[in-house]
Every structure is written in structure tokens, then in C-alpha cells.
Length: 115
Image (cartoon, rainbow, N blue to C red; front, side, top):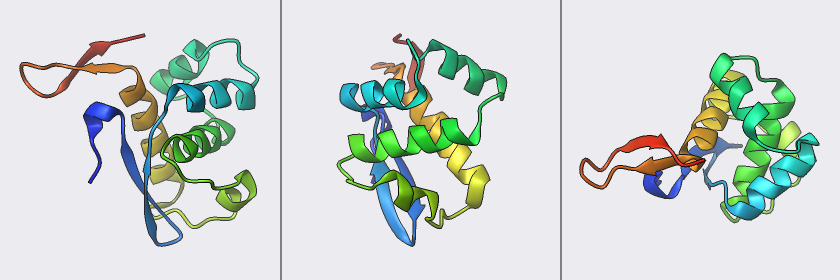
């Protein structure tokens, strides 16, 4: 079971369910992979629906590593993602959103941006 308050998202890759999470180290990996000075532009691309397949793959790979899965980029490129590209993009966007959302202790749901 995933814990959205911890920023976790589940994705089925090659028939295996994985829990992804953007830890601080995973976020640093993501910045390096995308050659970005900050993640603001990536967040803006996802919010505007202008993200690329490269963005999705980099987010998923960083989330896998943050979740403790040592998958290599090449393995993810050839993997079968349940739900296809649309599910991969949905998961990547949710992963990014959960990394920068503070849970509302009163309602138990997320509210407001932390970054």
C-alpha cells in the first residue's frame, strides 16, 4: 500500500508493483538527469501539460531509485508499464505533485505547496 503523505505512488512495471518516491537524493538525481538548475521548470511543464517523454522517464527512474528500486534507465526504457504511456505520465505527474505537497493534518488530505 502506498502512503501519499510520504509522497509515494505505485506503478506496475513488467507485471511487478513498485512504490516510487522522490526523496531529496532522487530530486537531485532528477535535476542532473534533466540538466536543470531547478525543478520549477519541470513542475511548470507538468502543470501546463507541456512535458516530454524524457521528463516522464526521468521522473519515474528517480522515483524508483527514491523508492529503493535499483532499476537502470535502459531497463525502464524497454519495460512494459501497465496502462501504457498515459499511466506513466499520470504517475510521474502525481509523483511530482506529492513531492511538493504538504498534507493537511486536519483533513488527512494534501493542501498547498511546500516548495
